[in-house]
Length: 603
Image (cartoon, rainbow, N blue to C red):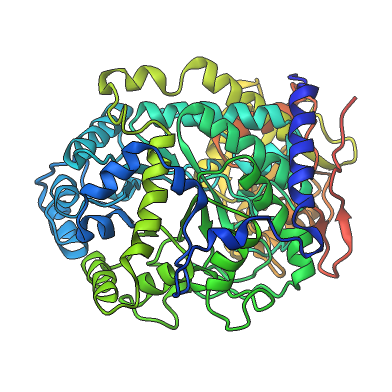
Protein backbone atom coordinates (compact mmCIF):
# COMPACT_ATOMS: atom_id res chain seq x y z
CA UNK A 1 0.00 0.00 0.00
CA UNK A 2 1.33 3.44 -0.89
CA UNK A 3 1.94 5.67 2.12
CA UNK A 4 1.21 9.35 1.43
CA UNK A 5 4.31 11.50 1.67
CA UNK A 6 3.71 13.59 4.75
CA UNK A 7 5.75 16.46 3.36
CA UNK A 8 3.54 16.73 0.28
CA UNK A 9 0.34 16.32 2.28
CA UNK A 10 1.48 18.85 4.86
CA UNK A 11 2.24 21.42 2.17
CA UNK A 12 -1.09 20.81 0.48
CA UNK A 13 -3.10 21.10 3.66
CA UNK A 14 -1.21 24.20 4.75
CA UNK A 15 -1.70 25.92 1.41
CA UNK A 16 -5.40 25.07 1.37
CA UNK A 17 -5.92 26.28 4.92
CA UNK A 18 -4.18 29.55 4.19
CA UNK A 19 -6.13 30.12 1.00
CA UNK A 20 -9.47 29.31 2.58
CA UNK A 21 -8.77 31.66 5.48
CA UNK A 22 -8.64 34.52 2.99
CA UNK A 23 -12.34 34.03 2.20
CA UNK A 24 -13.69 34.00 5.72
CA UNK A 25 -15.29 36.98 7.39
CA UNK A 26 -16.04 38.78 4.14
CA UNK A 27 -12.36 39.53 3.50
CA UNK A 28 -11.62 41.16 0.15
CA UNK A 29 -8.46 40.24 -1.72
CA UNK A 30 -6.09 43.22 -1.82
CA UNK A 31 -5.71 44.89 -5.16
CA UNK A 32 -9.15 43.86 -6.45
CA UNK A 33 -10.22 47.41 -7.20
CA UNK A 34 -7.10 48.05 -9.25
CA UNK A 35 -7.84 45.01 -11.38
CA UNK A 36 -11.14 46.48 -12.44
CA UNK A 37 -9.39 48.98 -14.72
CA UNK A 38 -11.32 52.02 -15.91
CA UNK A 39 -14.10 50.32 -17.91
CA UNK A 40 -17.61 51.66 -17.53
CA UNK A 41 -19.47 48.50 -18.58
CA UNK A 42 -19.78 45.43 -16.34
CA UNK A 43 -17.06 42.94 -17.16
CA UNK A 44 -14.57 45.60 -18.37
CA UNK A 45 -12.08 44.32 -15.79
CA UNK A 46 -8.47 44.09 -16.95
CA UNK A 47 -6.41 41.30 -15.41
CA UNK A 48 -3.33 42.60 -13.60
CA UNK A 49 -1.22 39.68 -14.81
CA UNK A 50 -1.89 40.52 -18.46
CA UNK A 51 -0.42 44.01 -17.96
CA UNK A 52 2.94 42.26 -17.75
CA UNK A 53 2.10 39.68 -20.41
CA UNK A 54 4.92 38.19 -22.51
CA UNK A 55 5.88 39.87 -25.75
CA UNK A 56 4.32 37.00 -27.66
CA UNK A 57 0.90 37.82 -26.22
CA UNK A 58 1.05 41.49 -27.17
CA UNK A 59 2.52 40.76 -30.59
CA UNK A 60 -0.27 38.33 -31.42
CA UNK A 61 -2.96 40.62 -30.06
CA UNK A 62 -1.68 43.55 -32.12
CA UNK A 63 -1.82 41.45 -35.29
CA UNK A 64 -5.43 40.41 -34.82
CA UNK A 65 -8.47 41.98 -36.39
CA UNK A 66 -11.58 42.41 -34.27
CA UNK A 67 -13.02 39.36 -36.02
CA UNK A 68 -9.95 37.31 -35.09
CA UNK A 69 -10.24 38.43 -31.47
CA UNK A 70 -13.90 37.49 -31.28
CA UNK A 71 -13.10 34.08 -32.73
CA UNK A 72 -10.63 33.52 -29.88
CA UNK A 73 -13.46 33.85 -27.38
CA UNK A 74 -15.10 30.61 -28.53
CA UNK A 75 -14.43 26.91 -27.99
CA UNK A 76 -16.61 24.56 -30.03
CA UNK A 77 -16.70 20.96 -31.15
CA UNK A 78 -16.25 19.90 -34.74
CA UNK A 79 -17.42 16.69 -36.37
CA UNK A 80 -15.03 14.28 -38.01
CA UNK A 81 -12.24 11.86 -37.16
CA UNK A 82 -9.77 14.02 -39.10
CA UNK A 83 -9.37 17.77 -39.37
CA UNK A 84 -9.99 17.72 -43.13
CA UNK A 85 -12.79 15.15 -43.15
CA UNK A 86 -14.95 14.93 -46.25
CA UNK A 87 -17.31 12.36 -44.76
CA UNK A 88 -20.77 13.51 -45.79
CA UNK A 89 -22.49 13.21 -42.41
CA UNK A 90 -19.70 15.08 -40.62
CA UNK A 91 -19.64 17.79 -43.30
CA UNK A 92 -23.41 18.27 -43.01
CA UNK A 93 -23.21 18.57 -39.21
CA UNK A 94 -20.34 21.04 -39.39
CA UNK A 95 -22.13 23.20 -41.95
CA UNK A 96 -25.29 23.30 -39.83
CA UNK A 97 -23.61 24.20 -36.53
CA UNK A 98 -20.42 25.97 -37.56
CA UNK A 99 -20.84 27.24 -41.11
CA UNK A 100 -17.81 25.31 -42.42
CA UNK A 101 -17.26 21.87 -43.94
CA UNK A 102 -14.70 20.51 -41.49
CA UNK A 103 -12.53 21.39 -38.54
CA UNK A 104 -9.59 22.64 -40.59
CA UNK A 105 -11.78 24.93 -42.68
CA UNK A 106 -13.56 26.25 -39.59
CA UNK A 107 -10.35 26.95 -37.69
CA UNK A 108 -8.77 28.71 -40.66
CA UNK A 109 -11.87 30.86 -41.24
CA UNK A 110 -12.83 31.84 -37.69
CA UNK A 111 -9.63 31.35 -35.63
CA UNK A 112 -11.39 30.05 -32.50
CA UNK A 113 -9.66 29.93 -29.16
CA UNK A 114 -10.14 26.20 -28.87
CA UNK A 115 -11.76 22.93 -29.89
CA UNK A 116 -13.34 20.42 -27.51
CA UNK A 117 -13.42 16.68 -28.25
CA UNK A 118 -16.29 14.24 -27.81
CA UNK A 119 -16.30 10.59 -28.85
CA UNK A 120 -19.64 11.00 -30.64
CA UNK A 121 -18.30 13.91 -32.70
CA UNK A 122 -14.70 12.90 -33.37
CA UNK A 123 -14.63 9.12 -33.18
CA UNK A 124 -11.67 9.13 -30.78
CA UNK A 125 -10.93 5.59 -31.87
CA UNK A 126 -7.26 5.29 -30.88
CA UNK A 127 -4.36 7.46 -29.67
CA UNK A 128 -2.83 7.82 -33.13
CA UNK A 129 -6.08 9.02 -34.67
CA UNK A 130 -6.65 11.51 -31.86
CA UNK A 131 -3.11 12.85 -32.16
CA UNK A 132 -3.43 13.21 -35.95
CA UNK A 133 -6.73 15.06 -35.52
CA UNK A 134 -5.08 17.41 -33.03
CA UNK A 135 -2.14 18.04 -35.36
CA UNK A 136 -4.43 18.76 -38.30
CA UNK A 137 -6.40 21.31 -36.30
CA UNK A 138 -3.24 22.98 -35.00
CA UNK A 139 -1.81 23.18 -38.50
CA UNK A 140 -4.93 25.05 -39.62
CA UNK A 141 -4.65 27.42 -36.64
CA UNK A 142 -1.37 28.96 -37.78
CA UNK A 143 0.46 31.41 -35.50
CA UNK A 144 -2.04 31.28 -32.63
CA UNK A 145 -2.42 27.65 -31.55
CA UNK A 146 -5.61 26.16 -30.24
CA UNK A 147 -6.59 25.01 -26.81
CA UNK A 148 -7.61 21.41 -27.51
CA UNK A 149 -9.72 20.16 -24.64
CA UNK A 150 -12.06 17.50 -23.38
CA UNK A 151 -13.94 16.49 -20.23
CA UNK A 152 -11.72 13.68 -18.96
CA UNK A 153 -12.75 13.62 -15.31
CA UNK A 154 -12.57 9.80 -15.28
CA UNK A 155 -15.10 7.60 -13.54
CA UNK A 156 -18.57 8.61 -14.73
CA UNK A 157 -17.41 11.39 -17.10
CA UNK A 158 -14.84 10.22 -19.62
CA UNK A 159 -14.53 11.05 -23.32
CA UNK A 160 -11.47 9.03 -24.30
CA UNK A 161 -11.80 5.37 -23.42
CA UNK A 162 -9.37 2.48 -23.58
CA UNK A 163 -6.53 2.11 -24.33
CA UNK A 164 -6.18 5.36 -22.36
CA UNK A 165 -5.78 4.59 -18.66
CA UNK A 166 -9.20 4.56 -17.00
CA UNK A 167 -8.92 5.96 -13.48
CA UNK A 168 -11.86 5.34 -11.09
CA UNK A 169 -12.71 9.05 -10.74
CA UNK A 170 -12.98 11.74 -8.07
CA UNK A 171 -15.05 10.17 -5.27
CA UNK A 172 -13.01 6.95 -5.26
CA UNK A 173 -9.90 9.11 -4.88
CA UNK A 174 -11.57 10.85 -1.95
CA UNK A 175 -12.17 7.44 -0.39
CA UNK A 176 -8.44 6.67 -0.46
CA UNK A 177 -7.58 9.88 1.48
CA UNK A 178 -4.31 9.82 -0.48
CA UNK A 179 -3.35 13.23 -1.89
CA UNK A 180 -0.21 11.85 -3.48
CA UNK A 181 -2.33 9.36 -5.41
CA UNK A 182 -4.61 12.17 -6.59
CA UNK A 183 -1.61 14.14 -7.85
CA UNK A 184 -0.09 11.09 -9.54
CA UNK A 185 -3.33 10.11 -11.24
CA UNK A 186 -3.77 13.62 -12.63
CA UNK A 187 -0.16 13.79 -13.79
CA UNK A 188 -0.47 10.49 -15.65
CA UNK A 189 -3.81 11.52 -17.12
CA UNK A 190 -2.37 14.87 -18.21
CA UNK A 191 0.63 13.22 -19.85
CA UNK A 192 -1.60 10.81 -21.76
CA UNK A 193 -3.85 13.62 -22.97
CA UNK A 194 -0.83 15.68 -24.02
CA UNK A 195 0.59 12.75 -25.98
CA UNK A 196 -2.63 12.74 -28.01
CA UNK A 197 -2.40 16.47 -28.71
CA UNK A 198 -4.77 17.74 -26.03
CA UNK A 199 -3.50 20.58 -23.87
CA UNK A 200 -6.57 21.40 -21.72
CA UNK A 201 -8.72 19.26 -19.45
CA UNK A 202 -12.00 20.40 -17.96
CA UNK A 203 -11.15 18.97 -14.56
CA UNK A 204 -11.02 18.73 -11.58
CA UNK A 205 -14.57 19.03 -10.29
CA UNK A 206 -14.39 21.33 -7.25
CA UNK A 207 -18.05 20.92 -6.23
CA UNK A 208 -18.83 19.77 -2.70
CA UNK A 209 -21.56 17.16 -3.08
CA UNK A 210 -23.79 17.76 -0.06
CA UNK A 211 -27.05 16.66 -1.70
CA UNK A 212 -27.31 12.86 -1.98
CA UNK A 213 -29.96 13.32 -4.69
CA UNK A 214 -27.74 15.54 -6.84
CA UNK A 215 -28.39 14.24 -10.37
CA UNK A 216 -25.42 15.83 -12.12
CA UNK A 217 -22.44 15.80 -9.71
CA UNK A 218 -22.47 12.82 -7.32
CA UNK A 219 -19.30 10.75 -7.75
CA UNK A 220 -17.77 13.52 -9.88
CA UNK A 221 -17.07 15.26 -6.55
CA UNK A 222 -14.30 14.20 -4.19
CA UNK A 223 -16.81 14.23 -1.33
CA UNK A 224 -19.13 16.17 0.95
CA UNK A 225 -16.48 17.72 3.19
CA UNK A 226 -15.20 21.12 2.02
CA UNK A 227 -11.70 20.68 3.39
CA UNK A 228 -11.31 17.24 1.82
CA UNK A 229 -12.53 18.50 -1.57
CA UNK A 230 -10.21 21.52 -1.35
CA UNK A 231 -7.18 19.33 -0.63
CA UNK A 232 -7.90 16.93 -3.49
CA UNK A 233 -8.67 19.78 -5.88
CA UNK A 234 -5.29 21.30 -5.05
CA UNK A 235 -3.52 18.00 -5.61
CA UNK A 236 -5.12 17.46 -8.99
CA UNK A 237 -4.56 21.01 -10.25
CA UNK A 238 -0.84 20.52 -9.72
CA UNK A 239 -0.90 17.01 -11.13
CA UNK A 240 -2.60 17.85 -14.40
CA UNK A 241 -0.30 20.81 -14.95
CA UNK A 242 2.75 18.66 -14.23
CA UNK A 243 1.44 16.28 -16.88
CA UNK A 244 1.37 19.07 -19.43
CA UNK A 245 -2.23 20.24 -19.61
CA UNK A 246 -4.14 23.30 -18.43
CA UNK A 247 -6.91 22.72 -15.90
CA UNK A 248 -10.35 24.12 -15.18
CA UNK A 249 -11.89 23.95 -11.71
CA UNK A 250 -15.67 23.65 -11.98
CA UNK A 251 -18.55 24.58 -11.50
CA UNK A 252 -18.36 28.03 -9.86
CA UNK A 253 -19.82 29.12 -7.47
CA UNK A 254 -20.68 25.52 -6.54
CA UNK A 255 -23.01 22.90 -8.01
CA UNK A 256 -23.00 20.41 -5.14
CA UNK A 257 -26.38 21.07 -3.52
CA UNK A 258 -29.03 20.78 -6.19
CA UNK A 259 -31.69 18.30 -7.20
CA UNK A 260 -31.85 19.64 -10.78
CA UNK A 261 -29.53 18.82 -13.68
CA UNK A 262 -28.43 22.06 -15.38
CA UNK A 263 -28.30 20.23 -18.70
CA UNK A 264 -32.10 20.11 -18.70
CA UNK A 265 -33.18 22.85 -16.26
CA UNK A 266 -32.05 25.78 -14.16
CA UNK A 267 -31.06 24.69 -10.64
CA UNK A 268 -31.42 26.97 -7.63
CA UNK A 269 -28.86 26.86 -4.82
CA UNK A 270 -30.45 28.00 -1.55
CA UNK A 271 -27.26 28.35 0.50
CA UNK A 272 -26.82 31.56 2.44
CA UNK A 273 -23.71 33.66 1.92
CA UNK A 274 -22.25 32.18 5.09
CA UNK A 275 -23.00 28.65 3.88
CA UNK A 276 -21.38 29.44 0.52
CA UNK A 277 -18.24 30.66 2.27
CA UNK A 278 -18.14 27.59 4.49
CA UNK A 279 -19.25 24.86 2.07
CA UNK A 280 -18.85 25.83 -1.58
CA UNK A 281 -16.04 28.38 -1.67
CA UNK A 282 -13.03 26.56 -0.13
CA UNK A 283 -12.25 24.24 -3.07
CA UNK A 284 -12.35 27.14 -5.54
CA UNK A 285 -10.20 29.29 -3.27
CA UNK A 286 -7.76 26.37 -3.07
CA UNK A 287 -7.79 25.89 -6.85
CA UNK A 288 -7.01 29.57 -7.39
CA UNK A 289 -4.20 29.44 -4.83
CA UNK A 290 -2.81 26.38 -6.62
CA UNK A 291 -2.71 28.26 -9.92
CA UNK A 292 -5.70 26.85 -11.79
CA UNK A 293 -5.67 28.06 -15.40
CA UNK A 294 -9.45 28.29 -15.71
CA UNK A 295 -12.56 28.33 -13.59
CA UNK A 296 -15.77 27.13 -15.21
CA UNK A 297 -19.06 28.84 -14.39
CA UNK A 298 -22.22 26.98 -13.43
CA UNK A 299 -25.64 27.44 -14.98
CA UNK A 300 -27.28 27.84 -11.58
CA UNK A 301 -29.24 30.51 -9.73
CA UNK A 302 -27.68 31.47 -6.41
CA UNK A 303 -29.97 34.10 -4.85
CA UNK A 304 -27.69 34.83 -1.89
CA UNK A 305 -24.91 35.80 -4.29
CA UNK A 306 -27.05 37.53 -6.95
CA UNK A 307 -30.67 38.32 -6.18
CA UNK A 308 -31.38 39.11 -9.86
CA UNK A 309 -31.59 35.30 -10.27
CA UNK A 310 -29.49 35.35 -13.42
CA UNK A 311 -27.61 32.10 -13.93
CA UNK A 312 -24.09 32.40 -12.53
CA UNK A 313 -22.74 32.19 -16.08
CA UNK A 314 -24.52 35.48 -16.85
CA UNK A 315 -24.04 37.13 -13.45
CA UNK A 316 -21.64 40.07 -13.16
CA UNK A 317 -21.85 40.02 -9.32
CA UNK A 318 -20.78 36.37 -9.30
CA UNK A 319 -18.18 36.20 -12.09
CA UNK A 320 -16.63 39.65 -11.73
CA UNK A 321 -17.60 40.83 -8.25
CA UNK A 322 -17.01 37.52 -6.51
CA UNK A 323 -14.64 35.39 -8.59
CA UNK A 324 -12.44 38.14 -10.01
CA UNK A 325 -12.58 40.86 -7.36
CA UNK A 326 -13.11 39.07 -4.06
CA UNK A 327 -11.32 35.78 -4.73
CA UNK A 328 -8.69 37.41 -6.91
CA UNK A 329 -8.84 34.96 -9.82
CA UNK A 330 -6.65 36.27 -12.64
CA UNK A 331 -7.05 33.40 -15.10
CA UNK A 332 -9.58 32.47 -17.75
CA UNK A 333 -13.25 32.24 -16.83
CA UNK A 334 -14.90 29.69 -19.10
CA UNK A 335 -18.63 29.15 -19.31
CA UNK A 336 -20.17 25.74 -19.00
CA UNK A 337 -21.60 24.59 -22.32
CA UNK A 338 -23.94 27.22 -23.75
CA UNK A 339 -26.14 24.59 -25.38
CA UNK A 340 -27.31 23.45 -21.93
CA UNK A 341 -30.86 24.31 -20.99
CA UNK A 342 -29.85 25.90 -17.69
CA UNK A 343 -28.49 28.99 -19.47
CA UNK A 344 -31.12 29.12 -22.24
CA UNK A 345 -34.27 29.29 -20.13
CA UNK A 346 -34.59 33.09 -20.08
CA UNK A 347 -32.49 34.35 -22.99
CA UNK A 348 -32.12 33.62 -26.69
CA UNK A 349 -29.01 32.00 -28.10
CA UNK A 350 -27.90 35.31 -29.63
CA UNK A 351 -27.99 37.09 -26.23
CA UNK A 352 -26.37 34.49 -24.01
CA UNK A 353 -22.77 34.96 -25.35
CA UNK A 354 -23.00 38.77 -25.02
CA UNK A 355 -24.41 38.57 -21.49
CA UNK A 356 -21.72 36.07 -20.47
CA UNK A 357 -19.00 38.44 -21.66
CA UNK A 358 -20.63 41.37 -19.88
CA UNK A 359 -20.71 39.26 -16.72
CA UNK A 360 -16.96 38.63 -16.95
CA UNK A 361 -16.54 35.36 -18.88
CA UNK A 362 -13.58 35.02 -21.26
CA UNK A 363 -14.18 31.77 -23.13
CA UNK A 364 -17.61 30.83 -24.52
CA UNK A 365 -18.04 27.08 -24.63
CA UNK A 366 -20.18 25.31 -27.22
CA UNK A 367 -22.86 27.79 -28.31
CA UNK A 368 -25.63 25.85 -30.07
CA UNK A 369 -25.34 28.07 -33.18
CA UNK A 370 -21.80 29.35 -33.58
CA UNK A 371 -22.40 31.79 -36.49
CA UNK A 372 -25.31 33.34 -34.58
CA UNK A 373 -23.23 33.72 -31.40
CA UNK A 374 -20.17 35.05 -33.25
CA UNK A 375 -22.17 37.67 -35.14
CA UNK A 376 -24.00 38.65 -31.94
CA UNK A 377 -20.73 39.48 -30.20
CA UNK A 378 -19.51 41.50 -33.19
CA UNK A 379 -22.83 43.34 -33.27
CA UNK A 380 -22.57 44.11 -29.55
CA UNK A 381 -19.16 45.70 -30.13
CA UNK A 382 -20.48 47.70 -33.08
CA UNK A 383 -23.39 48.94 -30.94
CA UNK A 384 -21.10 49.88 -28.05
CA UNK A 385 -22.61 47.34 -25.68
CA UNK A 386 -19.21 45.64 -25.53
CA UNK A 387 -15.99 47.60 -26.01
CA UNK A 388 -13.01 46.33 -27.98
CA UNK A 389 -10.97 46.89 -24.82
CA UNK A 390 -13.24 44.39 -23.07
CA UNK A 391 -12.65 41.88 -25.86
CA UNK A 392 -8.90 42.51 -25.64
CA UNK A 393 -8.90 41.76 -21.90
CA UNK A 394 -10.29 38.27 -22.49
CA UNK A 395 -8.07 37.56 -25.47
CA UNK A 396 -5.01 38.56 -23.41
CA UNK A 397 -5.97 36.07 -20.73
CA UNK A 398 -6.44 33.31 -23.31
CA UNK A 399 -3.15 34.06 -25.04
CA UNK A 400 -1.35 34.29 -21.70
CA UNK A 401 -2.71 30.87 -20.74
CA UNK A 402 -1.49 29.36 -24.02
CA UNK A 403 1.91 30.93 -23.55
CA UNK A 404 2.18 29.85 -19.91
CA UNK A 405 1.48 26.23 -20.85
CA UNK A 406 4.08 26.29 -23.64
CA UNK A 407 1.55 25.63 -26.37
CA UNK A 408 2.98 28.08 -28.97
CA UNK A 409 6.41 26.42 -28.73
CA UNK A 410 5.06 22.88 -29.16
CA UNK A 411 1.52 22.76 -30.54
CA UNK A 412 2.09 19.48 -32.42
CA UNK A 413 2.76 15.98 -31.14
CA UNK A 414 4.29 12.84 -32.57
CA UNK A 415 1.23 10.88 -33.65
CA UNK A 416 3.28 7.75 -34.24
CA UNK A 417 4.42 7.74 -30.60
CA UNK A 418 1.01 8.39 -29.02
CA UNK A 419 0.02 4.75 -28.62
CA UNK A 420 3.20 3.95 -26.69
CA UNK A 421 2.54 6.78 -24.21
CA UNK A 422 -1.04 5.80 -23.39
CA UNK A 423 -2.29 3.01 -21.15
CA UNK A 424 1.16 1.73 -20.23
CA UNK A 425 1.56 -1.09 -17.73
CA UNK A 426 2.86 1.38 -15.16
CA UNK A 427 -0.13 3.70 -15.64
CA UNK A 428 -2.61 0.84 -15.43
CA UNK A 429 -0.99 -0.35 -12.22
CA UNK A 430 -1.51 3.08 -10.63
CA UNK A 431 -5.19 3.06 -11.62
CA UNK A 432 -5.61 -0.45 -10.20
CA UNK A 433 -3.91 0.55 -6.95
CA UNK A 434 -6.20 3.55 -6.49
CA UNK A 435 -9.25 1.42 -7.19
CA UNK A 436 -8.15 -1.22 -4.69
CA UNK A 437 -7.63 1.32 -1.91
CA UNK A 438 -10.98 3.02 -2.57
CA UNK A 439 -13.32 0.07 -1.98
CA UNK A 440 -15.26 0.76 1.21
CA UNK A 441 -16.91 -1.87 3.38
CA UNK A 442 -19.95 -0.26 5.00
CA UNK A 443 -21.55 -3.24 6.75
CA UNK A 444 -20.71 -6.90 7.24
CA UNK A 445 -22.19 -9.63 9.40
CA UNK A 446 -19.34 -12.02 8.66
CA UNK A 447 -20.54 -12.97 5.18
CA UNK A 448 -17.42 -11.39 3.72
CA UNK A 449 -14.84 -12.39 2.83
CA UNK A 450 -16.58 -15.06 0.79
CA UNK A 451 -15.30 -18.52 1.62
CA UNK A 452 -16.04 -19.96 -1.82
CA UNK A 453 -18.80 -21.59 -3.80
CA UNK A 454 -21.34 -20.42 -6.35
CA UNK A 455 -22.16 -16.73 -6.83
CA UNK A 456 -24.93 -14.96 -8.70
CA UNK A 457 -24.08 -11.43 -9.80
CA UNK A 458 -27.23 -9.49 -10.54
CA UNK A 459 -28.55 -5.94 -10.51
CA UNK A 460 -27.69 -2.79 -12.47
CA UNK A 461 -25.54 -2.61 -15.59
CA UNK A 462 -25.05 -5.17 -18.31
CA UNK A 463 -21.34 -4.42 -18.65
CA UNK A 464 -20.97 -3.99 -14.89
CA UNK A 465 -22.46 -7.36 -13.95
CA UNK A 466 -20.56 -9.09 -16.76
CA UNK A 467 -17.20 -7.55 -15.80
CA UNK A 468 -17.67 -8.25 -12.10
CA UNK A 469 -18.59 -11.85 -12.90
CA UNK A 470 -15.48 -12.17 -15.07
CA UNK A 471 -13.30 -10.74 -12.31
CA UNK A 472 -14.74 -13.17 -9.75
CA UNK A 473 -14.18 -16.07 -12.14
CA UNK A 474 -10.59 -14.96 -12.57
CA UNK A 475 -10.20 -15.39 -8.81
CA UNK A 476 -11.47 -18.97 -8.96
CA UNK A 477 -15.12 -18.31 -8.06
CA UNK A 478 -17.96 -20.02 -9.90
CA UNK A 479 -20.00 -17.00 -10.94
CA UNK A 480 -22.90 -16.22 -13.26
CA UNK A 481 -24.36 -12.85 -14.31
CA UNK A 482 -28.03 -11.88 -14.61
CA UNK A 483 -28.64 -8.20 -15.28
CA UNK A 484 -31.94 -6.80 -13.97
CA UNK A 485 -31.42 -3.10 -14.70
CA UNK A 486 -32.09 0.18 -12.94
CA UNK A 487 -35.82 -0.45 -12.55
CA UNK A 488 -36.42 -4.22 -12.44
CA UNK A 489 -40.03 -5.24 -12.90
CA UNK A 490 -41.73 -8.15 -11.17
CA UNK A 491 -40.64 -10.60 -13.86
CA UNK A 492 -36.99 -9.54 -13.61
CA UNK A 493 -37.09 -9.82 -9.82
CA UNK A 494 -38.65 -13.25 -10.04
CA UNK A 495 -35.95 -14.36 -12.49
CA UNK A 496 -33.23 -13.18 -10.12
CA UNK A 497 -34.81 -14.98 -7.16
CA UNK A 498 -35.05 -18.18 -9.20
CA UNK A 499 -31.42 -17.85 -10.34
CA UNK A 500 -30.33 -17.35 -6.72
CA UNK A 501 -31.71 -20.72 -5.65
CA UNK A 502 -28.89 -23.02 -4.60
CA UNK A 503 -26.25 -20.28 -4.68
CA UNK A 504 -23.86 -19.62 -1.85
CA UNK A 505 -23.88 -15.85 -2.36
CA UNK A 506 -25.70 -13.16 -4.33
CA UNK A 507 -23.96 -9.90 -5.23
CA UNK A 508 -26.34 -7.11 -6.25
CA UNK A 509 -24.82 -4.14 -8.05
CA UNK A 510 -26.85 -0.97 -7.43
CA UNK A 511 -26.89 2.46 -9.06
CA UNK A 512 -28.90 5.58 -8.16
CA UNK A 513 -31.18 3.96 -5.62
CA UNK A 514 -33.84 6.54 -4.79
CA UNK A 515 -36.84 6.36 -2.50
CA UNK A 516 -39.23 3.69 -3.77
CA UNK A 517 -36.64 2.26 -6.16
CA UNK A 518 -37.39 -1.13 -7.62
CA UNK A 519 -33.75 -2.00 -6.93
CA UNK A 520 -34.68 -2.02 -3.23
CA UNK A 521 -37.51 -4.42 -4.06
CA UNK A 522 -35.00 -6.69 -5.80
CA UNK A 523 -32.73 -6.72 -2.76
CA UNK A 524 -35.67 -7.39 -0.41
CA UNK A 525 -36.84 -10.32 -2.53
CA UNK A 526 -33.36 -11.82 -2.62
CA UNK A 527 -33.00 -11.46 1.15
CA UNK A 528 -36.34 -13.24 1.58
CA UNK A 529 -34.99 -16.07 -0.57
CA UNK A 530 -32.57 -16.94 2.23
CA UNK A 531 -29.30 -16.60 0.30
CA UNK A 532 -26.62 -14.27 1.72
CA UNK A 533 -26.76 -10.95 -0.14
CA UNK A 534 -23.98 -8.44 -0.72
CA UNK A 535 -25.04 -5.04 -2.05
CA UNK A 536 -22.35 -3.22 -4.04
CA UNK A 537 -22.99 0.44 -4.88
CA UNK A 538 -21.11 1.13 -8.12
CA UNK A 539 -22.22 4.78 -8.22
CA UNK A 540 -22.70 6.92 -5.16
CA UNK A 541 -22.56 5.20 -1.75
CA UNK A 542 -25.89 6.83 -0.88
CA UNK A 543 -27.52 3.67 -2.29
CA UNK A 544 -26.79 1.92 1.00
CA UNK A 545 -29.34 4.06 2.86
CA UNK A 546 -32.10 3.26 0.37
CA UNK A 547 -31.86 -0.52 0.60
CA UNK A 548 -33.20 -3.00 3.16
CA UNK A 549 -30.67 -4.55 5.55
CA UNK A 550 -28.27 -6.88 3.77
CA UNK A 551 -25.56 -9.26 4.91
CA UNK A 552 -22.81 -6.99 3.64
CA UNK A 553 -22.65 -3.62 1.93
CA UNK A 554 -19.82 -2.29 -0.25
CA UNK A 555 -19.15 0.93 -2.15
CA UNK A 556 -16.86 1.09 -5.16
CA UNK A 557 -18.03 4.57 -6.32
CA UNK A 558 -17.24 3.46 -9.86
CA UNK A 559 -18.03 0.85 -12.49
CA UNK A 560 -14.71 1.18 -14.32
CA UNK A 561 -12.79 -2.04 -14.96
CA UNK A 562 -10.19 -1.37 -12.23
CA UNK A 563 -12.93 -0.72 -9.65
CA UNK A 564 -14.83 -3.89 -10.51
CA UNK A 565 -11.63 -5.95 -10.38
CA UNK A 566 -10.91 -4.45 -6.95
CA UNK A 567 -14.48 -5.15 -5.82
CA UNK A 568 -14.05 -8.82 -6.73
CA UNK A 569 -10.84 -8.99 -4.72
CA UNK A 570 -12.55 -7.54 -1.66
CA UNK A 571 -15.50 -9.94 -1.96
CA UNK A 572 -13.19 -12.97 -2.12
CA UNK A 573 -10.83 -11.75 0.58
CA UNK A 574 -7.89 -11.34 -1.79
CA UNK A 575 -7.89 -7.72 -0.65
CA UNK A 576 -8.68 -6.17 2.73
CA UNK A 577 -10.98 -3.17 2.21
CA UNK A 578 -9.35 0.10 3.26
CA UNK A 579 -11.53 2.85 1.74
CA UNK A 580 -13.19 5.47 3.95
CA UNK A 581 -16.43 7.23 3.10
CA UNK A 582 -15.78 10.71 1.65
CA UNK A 583 -19.44 11.63 2.29
CA UNK A 584 -22.09 11.22 4.94
CA UNK A 585 -24.66 8.62 3.91
CA UNK A 586 -28.02 9.83 5.20
CA UNK A 587 -31.26 7.97 5.73
CA UNK A 588 -34.52 9.23 4.23
CA UNK A 589 -35.24 10.97 7.54
CA UNK A 590 -31.92 12.82 7.34
CA UNK A 591 -30.14 10.83 10.02
CA UNK A 592 -26.58 9.66 9.39
CA UNK A 593 -26.58 5.99 8.46
CA UNK A 594 -22.85 5.87 7.75
CA UNK A 595 -20.66 8.82 8.68
CA UNK A 596 -17.90 10.51 6.75
CA UNK A 597 -14.74 8.49 7.37
CA UNK A 598 -16.58 5.21 8.03
CA UNK A 599 -15.02 2.06 6.63
CA UNK A 600 -14.71 -1.49 8.00
CA UNK A 601 -11.80 -3.91 7.63
CA UNK A 602 -11.54 -7.69 7.72
CA UNK A 603 -8.49 -7.78 9.96
